[in-house]
Length: 141
Image (cartoon, rainbow, N blue to C red; front, side, top):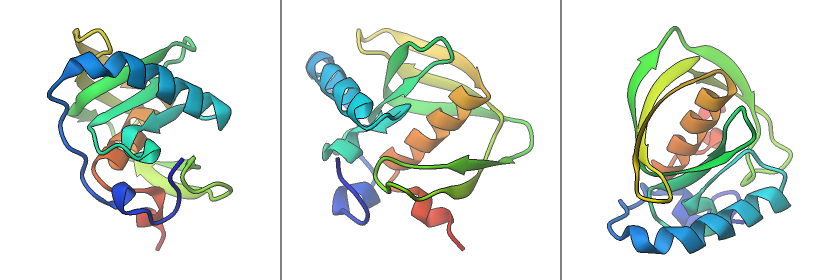
């Protein structure tokens, strides 16, 4: 697990071109996330500069988002108290949208368009920050 100011964490991740390698990465990322009791994990946190992350749905299922996008941000931003596996012990208040419309490819290569709200939306936005080279440290004033 990369921590603090590692270079990979501060750079925009590269798009995924070959989906065939995602199955093994999905398993590795789930294991790493669960070892650290997380609810989401971006590939850059595992030292891989790819636009990929995993996130936990309200059902408890874990979804992989490949080349994800936020298509729509819904509602006024609200403060979210967040921690991060790359910054253990640190809690930061981050402004997040309460609902989003997300689009991505899942681990099987199927295109998904999903309306996320509440905790799911917050996790998705947090992981989007990671693949865009931004961590919760960016929100400390």
